[in-house]
Length: 174
Image (tube, rainbow, N blue to C red; front, side):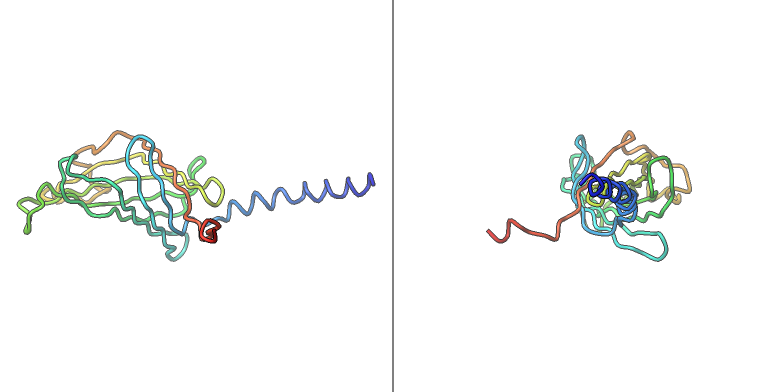
């Protein structure tokens, strides 16, 4: 009995690195929902690209008119594997906003961009930390993230937590 218990404990201890490794191998690809407790909520869709790169689309659940931009696009970006402290990925994303809802618009848009880092907390929770959030006026002819931003869109860091959309639906069978 004692030997069986010892063998079981040994097998359990040997399995621990496998469980940890499984979490390291979780892909961020998929559909996510979440955001910040202090700012906005989003749906995020992440697609794998070649190598260790991913494409992301954020779609916010808010009206940007109160921010002075009645029109805005979704936020599109890419990130790649880039180890930094506890983060596994880093990337940039860009959206376009405009002060005019007319067509054609009365003014030119602003490009709003974020630099962010991503870490996976298990396979079903993703933490995104934005360490830069700036904007470039279209007329400035600057290249986002290469040239200095024309304005700071929001103070950083902004911490967002996302949950993976489940493909299982126990509630659907009731």
